[in-house]
Image 1: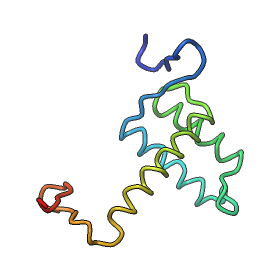
Image 2: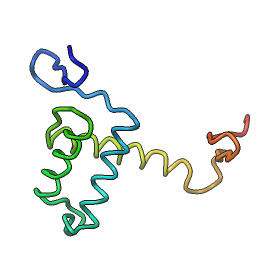
Image 3: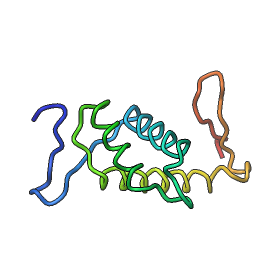
Length: 108
């Protein structure tokens, strides 16, 4: 299988292995769509999704669809919500160590 191909599990669903760099491109593309007004009432327009798909496919040499983008957005939102709940109070024992750019936690 070539690097830019998306594999399927029996032809039912396309699977994508997202990387941090792919997420970065996705978030930048979504932010641009919001800035130029293609997000209305907290919902991205069809044009926004078309633009994001085109940008990602061109920049990443992939064959992504609007469904791939929506699914990844849901995953990112879910992950963000989980981490936000853990860290929002500041009492979780977790903190960022700016010297090593990593999360640290108290032993207990």
